[in-house]
Amino acid sequence: MSKKKVLFVCIHNSARSQMAEAFLNKLAGDRFEAESAGLKKGTLNPVVVEAMKEIGIDISKNQTKDVSGFFKKGRIYSNVITVCDEASAERCPVFPGLEKQLHWSFSDPSQFQGTHEERLAQTRRLRDEIKYKIEEFIKQEVITTPIILQSVITCPECGHKKEELMPADACRFLYECENCKTVLKPEKGDCCVFCSYGSVPCPPVQERGRSGCCT
Image 1 (cartoon, rainbow, N blue to C red):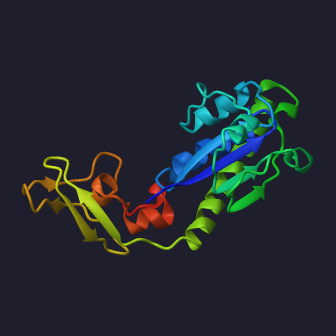
Image 2 (cartoon, one colour; image 1 turned 180 degrees about the horizontal axis):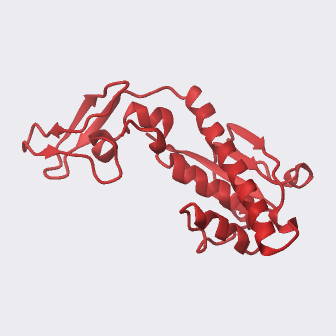
Image 3 (cartoon, rainbow, N blue to C red; image 1 turned 90 degrees about the vertical axis):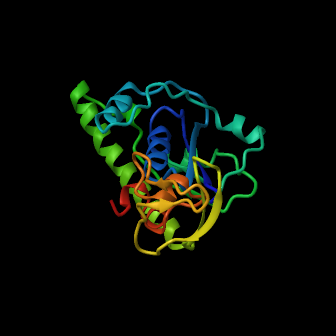
């Protein structure tokens, strides 16, 4: 199953777009490939890095990028989502072949005032707002995306391939290769053999993402 490519854009690619990219890749990386960029390159916001690290997401090594560079390279995206103020969003180039161009307005964390703890508290609230919006985006995309029930399993031992019909509302934990008779089990972090060895993940993961599988 090919992944939909999504680009998040803010002013400097220092905070809001970085968080949105990280959340979409973490929550639904099996269906989406997210990137982020700024209207111009800035520097990663250290308070944002700290807030994301608190929930187990490390963006400290991310590089900031310029959206014009992506545009000039002819990058193709299903969705481009601006996460800055509306006036700034209007400066984002229109990429060819877009399915949707969306705008989500979030507060700019570079403008947060107060002590470090006060700015961190405001950044946590922003982080959680962005995560919620990403979760809603995933749900909406699922509504308009048909569930695929066929998946080709490739045996890691002998390379044999076979198309199988997946159960619509359950995960399959064991699968015996008809060629070499090896009994396959899911790899660590996967809910079933289709998510580990199939060309398409199981329907529960297609519908709800990795965080919503049946395990």
